[in-house]
Length: 423
Ligand code: HAM
Image 1 (tube, rainbow, N blue to C red):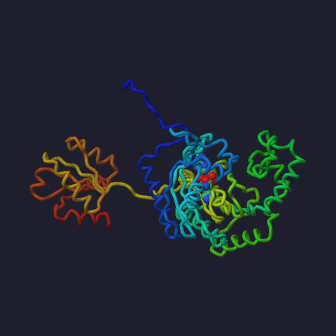
Image 2: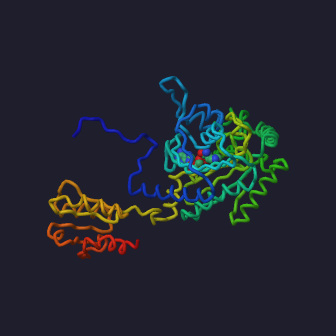
Image 3: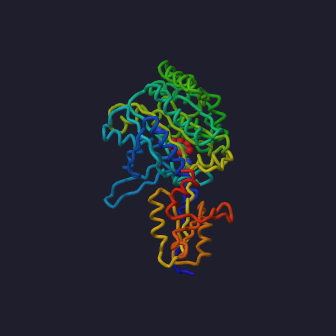
């Protein structure tokens, strides 16, 4: 036994190894293809930012910024934070680089939140998402929401519902918050322990509270959706009609305020009925028409969504999908019993011809190499022995049909493999 200490991945984080990682590759590839189809380009930006980006972006008082963010000082004393979500960084980059609008970017990113880890809730999770800036046209809301819906569809998810709400804009939200405050003031004693003392500061947060007490009080109170100004109501109606026109049903969820301060007008969430209640959101997003300004840019409307990769894969499993999103099994495993290391030449040739190829190392016996070939999951074993090689032949063994094998001329090998693998 080694006397060195051993380490595990930090609590709330996970390693993803093959073959599971092929599911990730497949999912991200699918999202990239769809995002491109909708005119989005990939954006890469740093995983850490000046903490101010998130304080101003998602709101210093938000649960995520105040309780869950990984904040640290670098060696020069700068206050930085690991990104807890993707939107604020994208908008910071937009403000910094002044790209042409509409600006449409997609991403795959880890996000870091110091949450209580449980199934479907991690301290490092991963999101695929998009952000689109430059117009408040409801057609863009429809486009962004439909991209999410089509993505879930392509993943085979059938038990996903779209919940939608509007946060209004500054003016109509402010008059609504006043109404809500009046209502809450009459019911302070009935609120949950967490919110009884702090309801006044940000009453909208209470709509997000899942505790029975708060749900009872807020359900009996005014709802923002009933107090929108004419413009915001028209915007909301147009979004819902646009979605309906392309066959996407949405349910109004008047309590859906989401956890970040940047949202204005459209907010939405996709929930999976196949997942447990607390972690059933597979994606969420909305408009943020003030965010660019809050991060020092010109006023520019935007909308986007983020979707949790882990949650999507959990939802797929919960719905019973076991066909892989991407087949990453090897085509061929070369078993070499020549003394001359012929495998080195053969794998190079086959890889060059486009096949995925594994091999054994360390000059093991044929039996030991066949064992590795079996374990590798490869479709075929290619057995090369000295006598066969002299005759210009190799043995092709079908690893999924035990015992089936045939001699193939080396000169014909590429064509034979392509035929068998239907390339
Ligand atoms: P969010 O709702 O906080 O929104 O996260 C988006 C998705 O990430 C969630 O629906 C969920 O699937 C997944 N997720 C969030 N937290 C965790 C966690 N701790 N563990 C596992 N999965 C998690 C945002 O982050 C916004 N930036 C979305 C957005 C984009 N709004 C506008 N543009």
